[in-house]
Length: 113
Length: 114
Image (cartoon, each protein chain N blue to C red):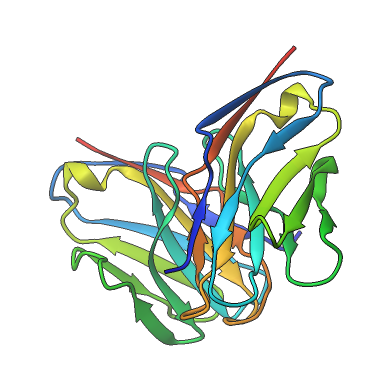
């Protein structure tokens, strides 16, 4: 069965430090992977996606993600965290059987000044 | 700016009193989705439309219905809300189902059931 996992419920990072939010996946074919961000009481916003090509994907707000096929991971990264990056982050993979997104449980990112 | 607009942002209803949430889009996307999200959990797909074709998720309760009268609008009807239906309801759109495009979300409608 296809699935996506975000092993950390919460990640705490000091402002200015690099951040990583982890995501691993399990799919039968080639993965279509996505990261979304949700600020409090707001809808989700698309950050970036991996379909094919370069393993390092750049997205909005200075975020990037690295696709690693051997480790079946798609970790979200940012070189220098901002307090305004504090939010809920969701990783998702496309379900090949119906083309809908399978969502991770979400990781709460807290950036402390 | 093209966008997805949900109304109302906050809805309070009484147990068993029907509620309708609306979603409109100016993106001219073919696909519209309704998700339910509880307590910062992952969003749960309730149903989606590909143009006028309605697709209901197998575990979506019968209490939830949807209408899409035209490309731009989609409605979520909750016929008899229970306490367990209190949640954030998210509308989203995408260009074409089966492609690799991302979803565009509205700001959500938060439903409180008293």
